[in-house]
Length: 633
Ligand code: ADP
Image (cartoon, rainbow, N blue to C red):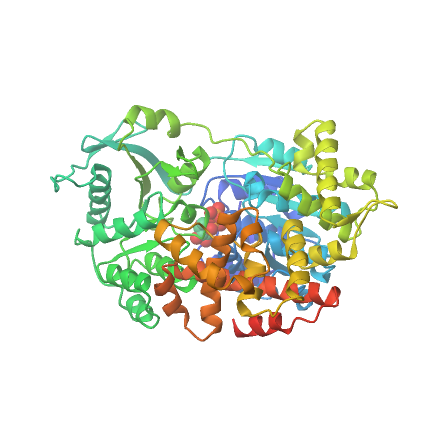
């Protein structure tokens, strides 16, 4: 099927032709046949790089009204926005404001790109740009099964469908075990295909050679190393060097940030390549010790990539790798689900990761997504993904990951905290005014699709009981959010976070609050992730907490989860240092936090301080320290 025959504006067809897109890829043609240009609902489950973006464009540009493109991450929102912005004659907006900002100016665009959280928040706040889209494209719709993002996504889709019953929905999914269930839930047709534009071979490296699925082998001997060297790391270095010798870039996946940095530093000795001058110059402008280490690696043509890096540095690494200025990127598994960074060879050194308690196997889906990064369309004849057999045997790895089916996507909405949040937002937005309304709406979720009705009734009743106890809902006459509950939902706070803030604000009004008080208030909520404390640091934070006990809204001897509170104090202390005039680089080095982590905490604290301000106004409490802290942060 030819692009020239598609019902797109001529300028868009020309634009695509200029980028070498003349013939549709088979999954794209299947989507057109299934009616993607005629308003039909579809779930398209295909591998990475098989051209999902064009399917999204076909749906959104042929729809009879405004379109919404829902993506899981902000970095992806930017990538998709840029792809749409490049199309002639298409007006596109991107939602980048903080979570409580309705961004009314986005209405009127042909297409708006936003994360699922932003769409959820915009719906709660009655924003015009989510009012009645003609078409909604959901990128990475298999994330319905993710604990963090899944519940928001399914409730958002259920709400959008209820408000606009004939909305076209196009879900773009990775290859999962049950795409048919997702399609069925959405009343959509399924296009499932394992076609890829570049062949992918998955293999296992053991005993100095890679054995691929098709039985072929490639010798990749591992040179003798120091006696205490880690065998899997040495094998990874050999595999990366081998790819570089063939003229291809490599992505190496390891289990943690620290391992990503250590592996990159090890690869610097491998003599892989050229210096990425542009990137190094830019990095030197903002030097933290992490930035300096990254710059040092970049000089040797190597980089690391993880969430602790500043977002500008992450983008720089991605761009340098795409431009082939960097030969190897050592990354945590998060890169596999992020932006488009194809590589000639993917090496998966670690197949296990610490899951909070112990080392656990990575899901098959995640490993397949890493493998899917192998093979750059137009550049590589084929892509190779290699799992390194370290402590595991090759046979174990083969059975677990090669040729194995990925997991089925299952709803995580029954999780108590998630359900509470969404029950409150449904009531606060006025989408339900009774228990039966609520049941009716939640009956349209993916959770209800896969569970017996009585489970839904029980979990909803439990959530309502919790919300009542928190003072967020009123069950005296029908069912409604309390004024405080409504305010909490509009500010996009979790009900627990909101209850804690309300409680803390009342205490604050009775003491002499300082910047530290304001920051402790907002950091001690589930809405800010504060990590954990290592031994030495814990002692120092404990001392600090004792010295400043009179400034806190929580009484030190009476906090429930003391360790959580201490980590919140650590974050509050760190942010106070910034308010007092230290610059971000100083704080990063002094507190040993990743620059990217500091960046995200500042952003969260600003949003929560804003939310606390509006709650204080609602409670008629005069606490100017909240806005003063937010503005100084
Ligand atoms: P996905 O979202 O499925 O991972 P993309 O939509 O990003 O994949 O497409 C991967 C690459 O393939 C992009 O560089 C895109 O320009 C290119 N591409 C997509 N469709 C076609 C086509 N029909 N012909 C040639 N190139 C295409």
